Length: 118
Length: 118
Length: 118
Length: 118
Image (cartoon, rainbow over all chains, first blue to last red):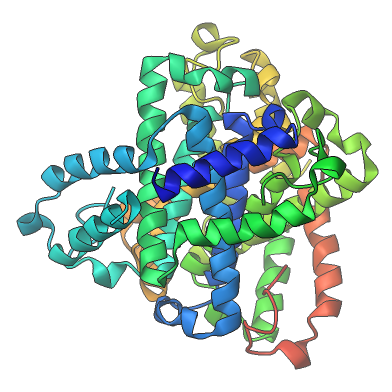
């Protein structure tokens, strides 16, 4: 069992023993995910891109960012479990596609020509 | 190497060979993550919670949701890599904390008393 | 001067006298806007759509929602001012277009056929 | 009647004549709002803050941004109407509060000490 499967199982159990499955519809979980991403943005919104590149050197900010990333991850993994989607497999499938679409030669160094990654 | 580490490495290489690391500041990646979550919400916004619970039975909708989840996962994993955060470990740490905070006895069946999961 | 123009002017002055214009780039303001929308979602995420339709009858929830809407409005108006966009005019232009695209006869009662409003 | 009230009334009528009020619960509208903000972020995510400050000089980008701002405004105004909140009044109330909290002397030139505006 991978670390991701274990985390997913733990979240399933966490919800089950509190009888929270009734609240964990894809609609609700997607909203919760978006809410957590909003909190992540709030940590970075007033910093310059350069400042955010070294933000983990600030211990307090690093702790907050780790916590926000954990929250986003938690809802994403729970949502994927409820929808029965394998996140790693789905991401690889998308990358296979985009590796072809955004050839190294054409897109090298340009963020304008294509949305990087996906 | 876990599936998550492999995905993370592949994304790193994908960015490196296109010289896109310059665009992958935490600030930019967090915005891209939020943008993808927005597309995920758009798939679910007009459905009732009940309809979203069975949305994967509709093949076309299932394909779109899998694709949106892949995009969210991709930017989350890339952002965590750039910030050097272990997503699974961070999520477990948060759950350790919340398992204590939201005891099964007190929070059973209630979404009002506590924000479920995190 | 309309109420919207007055609000916009007050925000401009609020930023100017604190020397915060340097932080108010469109990029930063868009992130702040998204962060506030995340807080708004958090107020509604565990409620059913029906519960949200009567949520303003709960005085505490009503106060929080009014506050979150105010925050979203504030950053939207500030962002539009920085980009020199007339929000009301832009919204009307979009509605002119969508009134033609989504004819009453074809789209009546269906959320599936079209994204309502825009 | 102000421009905002007129827009709000037009949206109400737009929904009514298509029988879309059934979909316009606060929960659904908040998700739609977040989805549109995601599209706005996507326009700005790979640009530097400096580039976004002059983004309206690029006619194509300006058109897309005007369109995205219109979409965000549309759902915000519709949501506020459904919740019976006066957006301009709510924003002023928040600013009254924050004008006191973030005194000009203490917060001048600092984004770290306080979340600007709200």
